[in-house]
Length: 176
Image 1 (tube, helix red, strand yellow):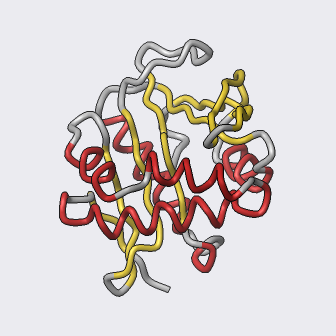
Image 2 (cartoon, rainbow, N blue to C red):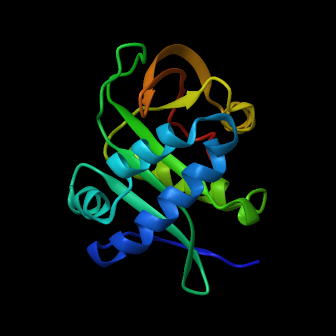
Image 3 (tube, rainbow, N blue to C red):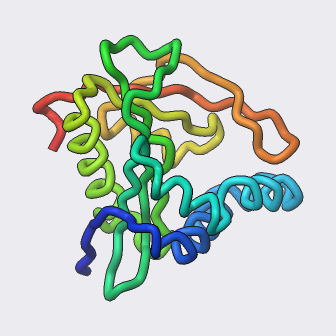
C-alpha cells in the first residue's frame, strides 16, 4: 500500500478539518461523552482553526495521503516548552493521527520519522508529547518509538478534565 507525505498548505484546511475530527472521534469516541467530543472538535478542528494552524510558521503540519486522500497527519510545534521535559531546545508533537483503516501499515511510523527530522531541523534536541493515560495503544506505540514517561498534565476534553502522560525522547541518530 503506497502513501506519501507532504506539508499542508492553506487549501488543505477544509479537508484536514474533516480528517482531524474523524480521527479524533475514532481514537476517543468509545470512552468519552459525545457532548465533550462535540465541544472539543468544535473548538479545535474547524476549517478556520486548521487554516490558522497551517499558516502559523511556528507549526509544521504534515499530511499523509494515498491516491489524493488524506489518511493521517501530524502537527509539530518546534521549541514549545514543557516544564517536565529536560532539554536545551524541545519540540512538541502536538498531534499525530491516522485513520483506523491505515493503522499498522507504516503511516504513523513515517509521520513520526518526519516529525523527528522536522524537529531536528529546528535545532530541537528532544521531542515530547501528551497522550491520554487510557490510550494504551498509543502509549505502546510511543514506547516502541523510544519515548519515556516524564510526567503528566491536565487535558481538557470539552468540559471534562483528563490526565495526559507527558512522554519525551532525545532526538538523535538512533531514530530512523
